[in-house]
Image (cartoon, rainbow, N blue to C red; front, side, top):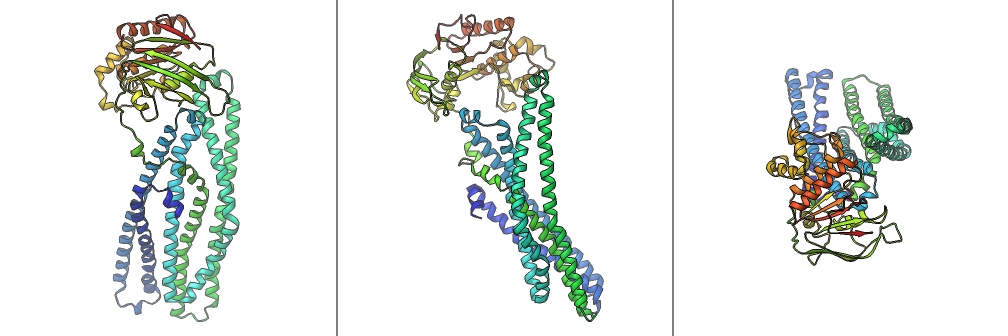
Amino acid sequence: MKRFWELIPENYRRGAIAVAALVPVNAALGLVGAAALLPLMMTVLDSESLPYPRQAVILAVMLLIVVKNILGLGITWVQNRYLMALYRNFSSRLFTSLYSRGLLYIKNQNSASMTFNVIGVCYNFVMGWLGAWMNMIGEMLFVFFMLVAVFIYSPKATLLSLAAFAPVLLLYFLMVRKPIKAINREVNNERREQHKLVSEAFRGYSEIQVNSALPGIRQRFGTHLDRVSQLRIRVSLIQNLPPFMLEFCVVLMVAVIMLLNLSPGSENMLFLGVVCVVLLKLLPAVRSIISCISAITANQYSCEVVADIEAGSAEESAEEDAAPMGFEDNIELRELSFRFPEDTADVISNLNLKIAKGERLGIKGRTGAGKTTLFNLLLGLYPPSRGAILVDGKPLTQENVASWHAIVGYVPQNVFVEDSTILENVALGRNPESIDRQKAEQALRQASLWEFISSLPQGMDSRIGEAGCRMSGGQKQRLGIARALYRNAKVLFFDEATSSLDAATEKEINAAIEKLSATHRELTIIIISHRESTLAFCDRIMEM
């Protein structure tokens, strides 16, 4: 309960108390349903002792069962609605938490595993762990209420009921619980590997196909499938042993009671009927308790993932568009150094540089010289190991980096493209209803992409497929430029934007950048390239 309380966000704790209060109510409704069977039994065994007509008793019982089930469904709806609200909160917060840890952290993680944690593990925690706890406590309360009620009627019936279930529960706790926990942890590890393999196979389709690598990948995927299947079969077998034993114990107990009943009188028959009702009602409750324990054990690992969420709700973590940072003079790199956490040597060491507003700066150098690392530092995606980056004399920090991002545009070698419309890609991350279509059109024209857009049947509303598969490399680069222009960027970063293009397309993109540079002299352009032709329009070139 302490672990549960620590993991629940503070603004959801009042709801947790309200939902928890419904658990004993639901258990009491279960007791009412069981008690309603006794008058029906009496109409069969001893109808003469009933103070009301048989038809009235049957009708009243039916009405009671209907009301009880409606209330039970209502409580279930409230509980599930709360659990799904928790799932949305945990999943959103984990996504935000992982994303906010920055590029260095994300590069050191497996994207498929993070995706699995955000979507799958959060759901397993809420429904498989919290939900199982809630159901188990409800069933245990029901069992307790039943045993108390039966004890009032007959202590002997209570002892017989306990004798039917206690050995199986004891066996489960001693022999079954730990193996299920270990097996389910292995199952989840195998599922992560499956998720990673499938994601990588679809992402690297071309290379896999050309290199005839599919058979090997399919074999590895099949190995994981076989392992998961074997583990699931073992879990299913182990989990079904207690229910089989429960049913056997119940039948055995009823047989013993019948053999010990020496007189067939109505009183003994009523006692036998009560015991049978109790056993038949307790049987599914005890089976449910065992299933809940299995689910809690299997999903225990999810607590570790959810506990890793940084403090703060998803709503608090979500940032609105930051106010643009002022930029009127220069960008200065002062004694800038950077080293990756796992490395012992600096990638960049004591770099001093001033970039004036409106300047066109070219950066060239051999592969591995630190050009892209420098861009990530200038973009605020990496924190400097030493030194500082200043914009108009103001240090760039994690507190103001969002304001810096509001005035910069970034066109990498491989432009990120969503599987959505061209319009939505130009105004990346914006609500479709709030996009300024006229402004988007202007940005596309300035990026020399409007001729292509005009040729499409749906124009800017045309979908361009996953990773922009319906666009050429040059068109995606122009889309990246249009995206920066739509955001009114004051500083443009081009990171090897033409290196993967053919000579003709590279020439077109260079012409588009030069035209942009000539018509927008207020723009500061910083461009990485290993080709002199791409840097020809720059005011100066720095070699790393």
